[in-house]
Structures are given as C-alpha cells and as structure tokens.
Image 1 (cartoon, helix red, strand yellow):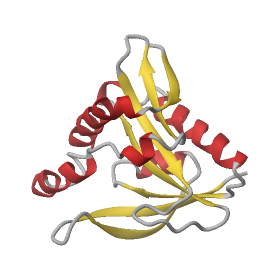
Image 2 (image 1 turned 180 degrees about the vertical axis):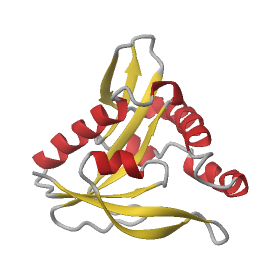
Image 3 (image 1 turned 30 degrees about the vertical axis):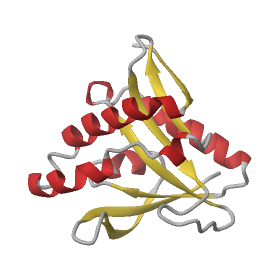
Length: 167
C-alpha cells in the first residue's frame, strides 16, 4: 500500500469531490444524523477550485493512481479574505474509508505544517468534524470551542474549533 503526496491540480477537481463524498458520507455517519448529512454533504463535498490552485492543497495518490486523501491550508480564514499574521487554516481534509489509520492524513498534515512554517506561520486553526476531532488531538491540536458552520441560510453544521501551535 504505497502512495505519494503531491500538490493538487485543477484537473483533480472531480476526483477530489468523489473522495470527499466517499469519505464524509461513510466516516461522518456515526457522528451526525442522516437527515443533517443529507442536507450538508452537497455543500461539503465539492472540491474548492481556489484551494486546488493554491499550491497549498495536497492529494495522496495510490500507486494505482487513485486519490486516497486530500487536505491543505490557507492563510485566509475560510469564507473570507482575512489574513492574520502567523495564523493559517487547515482546509478540506479527507481520507478514503479504505485507507484510514494508515498514515495518509498524517502525511498530508506533515506537508501542510512544513510548508506553513516556511511561510512564518506559528499557529494552525481548523474547524473539525466530530469524527476527526481525535485525529487532530493526536497531532497536537487543542479544542477551543464548539461551533455551528453555516452552509446556507437554512443549514448549519455542528463542528469543533481547534488550534495548534507550530514548534
């Protein structure tokens, strides 16, 4: 089971969307009600073209060419153009259900941390699903607060705000 981590490209959009859908629909099912997921997943499982083209969004690709993980970071706070010096935001992490607990997401996070440090980032922030909270804790993130992320005027998604000081 080998894979590489590489920067994403615009041509990865469909495969990233499929990966997000496979990951979130499976791995979030035991943490959220089906009715909420039915409404939220269409918003959450579309690849973000800006992230894909940013140079700071990565995919893990198996030796067979399948995308098995993704994730990245941005200086901008999600949904805004606001930048706070020294702060970066973890974005759109997912692992294919068949590849969980094999180090895929950790490899992508290591790449994010290395690249963020090179840009003088001292703190990472993320908005985690309930399902991923323990993953982030294992990487040194601390829970800050609960949150409700608005997906549209009628749907918000319960999540956990987390932060991590980079060494």
